[in-house]
Length: 259
Image (cartoon, rainbow, N blue to C red):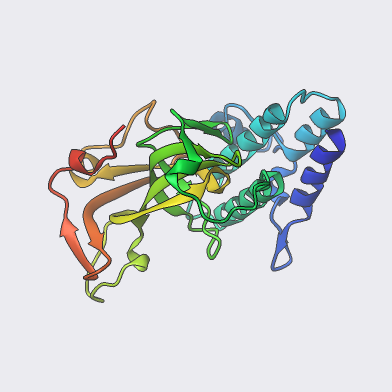
């Protein structure tokens, strides 16, 4: 597995956008004397150089152990370079590239799936996270990696080809809706939709959290529901695609998926 791991790391290092090396902030750790605040903010630091050293020292007995450190690398980077840092988008794009490099191929060749082709799972383990019904997540946005799609998990299952999947409900950002130009929005406001789709687990990027407006104004979520570096959004309305209109949510609990 060592050649495969080294090939993945080489691909990540060489990934560029507009002549910018996306992995540049991840290659090495900052000097503790020059940047002591980094080690206050990041409790479990790791770099690409360290991961490569671990590979050469055969420190990863399984693919899962290698994946765990890559997940930690990206998680730390998202925390250090949180929005509105321009580097945040680079980190998400690079993480998506890692997902593509490690994606399990569809050996079945079947393009359309029904529930008869699936087996329900209590949870899906992906990129070091255990995803369950009700979790809010960021999903890879291929058109704009800096703005991942926001979704809530409605079901977790495995297809007969072995592919782990999630049934998710989309939450739209303001720019994804049609609205009057005079309409104003809260910072980080999103809108629940009726769009429930299947995604492959490989498209999962990271956890996020969506709060109902009445909870949001009282404060932010606490552990274990939330942890530092996790994006928090506020929701007050549903967006109705058919009528291109907004409907105020009266009962937040009634909007949650059945577990």
